[in-house]
Length: 462
Ligand code: 5AD
Ligand code: SF4
Image (cartoon, rainbow, N blue to C red; front, side, top):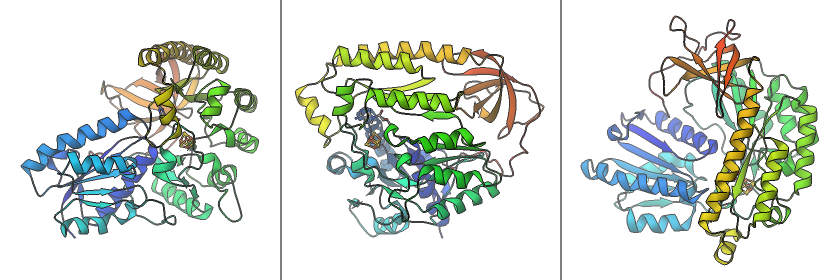
């Protein structure tokens, strides 16, 4: 046992957040204590994201800045983990530009963290241990979850889809599902601890279970999780429209717990672009899916991801995306400039047929203005309605305001009554105002949940 301190900096998606919780759990088991400031940490882990160039630049910039800390405190240890570690280019870059890094490990061997830290102590050089492919799914790893009543649970690792722009199948490997009983046991234990808002995670949760014997699917899993006492809201992310089955739609429609937020990344509204992206669906099939979701779940809140400026995207292709957004009327959209990822097919096409940067940016702006207008109009429809809101904490900008979320993932800001503590409680709230990115509301009744049995601590642990 030791009494050293650690700090984990996490970039990217919820899968990375979850990996950081598992790293933190292993470190806690070794006796390390978390700190919320890198300056006082004896071990810093940078958990990186490779999905777009901008995420990589942020992580590399941060790793560069840490050289100063390492110079001041040479016994401090610095590790680089996550998706960037799986890319050969990163290792070469770190060797050349970041000799102050002590350890590089990847997404497939994070369960070996204790062993890797031992190796660092025995070596004078940068320890690099990155597995090319994943082994068996490892169960029963310790984990240090974030505070509150929300918890994330992995159900499937990796992705077999190979969309031509995407690095994930290379950094996260092939699809591997966890067995239903292992997931059910984890969620039961979480519910007993007081977690009530559970999100099941995977790069493509809709292909969950196809690799198990006998094969099962996401709907089968959600039906089992729904039976667990104490779970109030069940979410799943992220989805692929191609595998989003009618059985899943019907399961969501009939469920009391699966939330009505449906995130369906479309990426583009143009058939030729969808084909070159290898998305395996057409615009018409996607729109048919949206219609079926709307019909079965009339209050569904629909959101999406869209890439602007994929190689060869013409004005006509882009207009098809704008038109699709007008047709679907998403509540929100995450919009991205296409970013070439080394080793992917689209990165090679980018060399031959790029959309010029100013054109990409102008299209992104047009798309964002359209979406913002639709988001505002969708939020305005909610004024006067009473929604159950999970109060997550205080607003970052104003400690006199509570920040919460509806089951459909809409942020709600509420003037705080200092006489009561409603954090981590589910509370009926009347919506009073609508903005593009959030709603405001007032508490109109007693919380429907008891205070969380989980003790809140001052320090965010991960
Ligand atoms: N460039 C831009 N956006 C990308 N995404 C994935 N890869 C890229 C890329 N190379 C976006 C997709 C995906 C989201 C998580 O990130 O929209 O759904
Ligand atoms: Fe990437 Fe496509 Fe897999 Fe999503 S489904 S992780 S975009 S390859």
